[in-house]
Image (cartoon, rainbow, N blue to C red; front, side, top):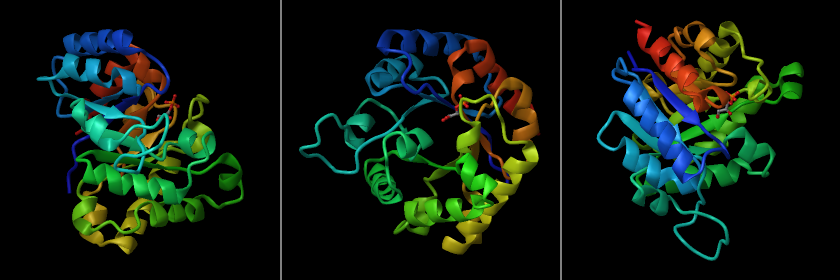
Length: 255
Ligand code: 13P
């Protein structure tokens, strides 16, 4: 099955409402043709609305970086999926490694967030990935299998039609180290196999699997030309017009 490529920019804790909208506007002005690539901008919560208003009517979509699992309630400082959806945002990154490892989010929490995101009408970009010590101990597959099993627990095959998975090796995030195309492809293949076991082969074949970790224009073709790598979740390089547009152009050039 042929899946079009997705390039998502995760701006993490950068760009307030004004700066984010300015970036989105210059991307919109410069991105005259996405070559079939789905482009998603993920600004901080406060900038979701201004970015959505800026890209509305173009092919650029908007994603949040996190949300709470409850429908509403006494959760000071948290944001619901419905609130995110109300801004026009369509996607939400869940289980990013910084949420897991800096803020202590468990697989169980992330699972509840995935369920709530679907109920809220959002498309989750569900992240998995191993730490360097886990890779060195040859536990990559074991770690990712558990993240998938618990994180996707209770989802139906129909739910999986709206779930995007991102593989982000923790050691490659913001470090300048990138998984080689072979390393990334091996894990993507493993993830597809795990999805097949958890659901079925149709779901495994139709699920978008993104790679994240120091993606830049120069390594985009190497990584994304693999048949199991359907796009990129980009951090640092998504905050500069030239490099982000470069990644989109490279992704769009892949047959
Ligand atoms: P970098 O592209 O800066 O390594 O970040 C990757 C990432 O965490 C995207 O979610």
